[in-house]
Image (cartoon, rainbow, N blue to C red; front, side, top):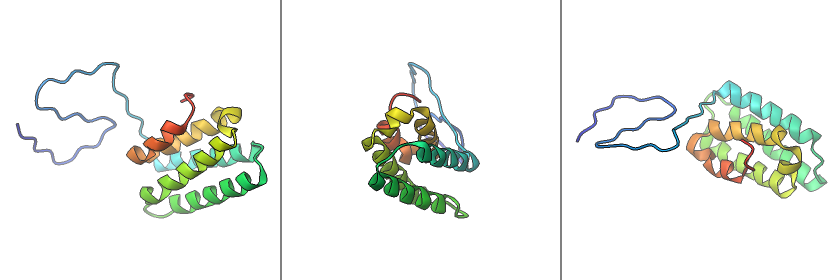
Length: 131
């Protein structure tokens, strides 16, 4: 079997040569750059209201600044942004903020992870099951 596909753009694409059985459905979340920037703004606001120790607060603010700088580039490099979002997630996780702040942090982090696509999978794996 040969597939000659010029271009595909969708949340889920399955190219199969024989039978395909899907159990539990398939979902795809598509996040635009504008939505990702809004999520970053919400994340920044959520971090500000979270009581972090001074070291974690400085580290989180550094990552937020760098993420925003990279996201505001004409062509954001997601391979540069993903590790920064993951470091920020780990900082907040270690500080206990993801549990205490709940959806104020987890929701925006999830949006950023979905915007990152496959690069965001490690971030989604760190988040509590609130998405």
